[in-house]
Picture 1 (tube, helix red, strand yellow):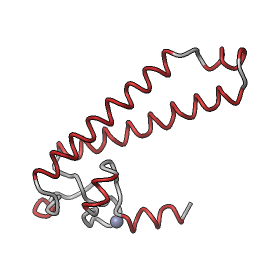
Picture 2 (cartoon, protein in one colour):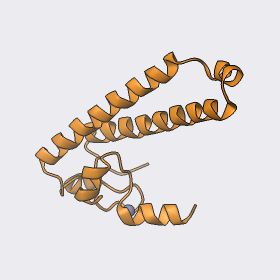
Picture 3 (cartoon, helix red, strand yellow):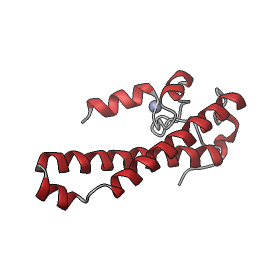
Picture 4 (cartoon, protein in one colour):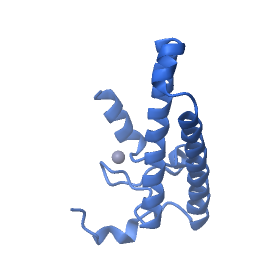
Length: 122
Ligand SMILES: [Zn+2]
């Protein structure tokens, strides 16, 4: 369980304007992904694609949907963190996630260093 003693340093490196811009960006991403998933759901089902088109195409379809769902989950988690005042802190080292990094990837959970370590560990 996370303790709540760290309220003082939450997102201290982000101004209210930064947070507003990031939240706006996340809302747009959420809409975009929801729309993408709706379109995929409305498209012919994967089994039909398998029959009528190539299996490779159906696989791409499934992968796009899976990645859209993953990004959507990340975006929603980030919006939740903003609402709860926990946004902008690295989940691993608990240091602030770089402002520049958040401006590019607002749903980032980790600081650039921890992200690199995680990717190297794969
Ligand atoms: Zn970190």
